[in-house]
Image (cartoon, rainbow, N blue to C red):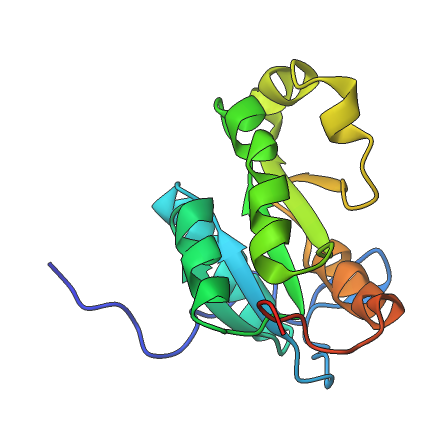
Length: 163
């Protein structure tokens, strides 16, 4: 087994543009992003893209792991959550996550097009929340960059566990 790389892997589209935004552009806001995805490959790809855009990424396999991090007083500016066939169960746990954080969280959900049916099966009430934003993978860097830039609208104060 090979050790994980200490740096993000090179983006295959480095220098290309997605939606008019250079994928080489980096966010200089010092954002710390929690990334929750049970799919190791998707977690690695999304973390790689976020890191290439300048975000500090802390990966988690399950939402319960992130709840534990908030309980341990770790701070995050935003959360990316991978949705899969268990989308309903994952979304039903978001209130627990926000309770641990002590406030509503800026969340973005990522799912593969082949799993959109699972997301469509989630009750509308769960998908109607302020924080529900869905991106289809593979996510273009421009979409992630746009989301990172919206985090300022959440007050730019770092999210943290109960004060």
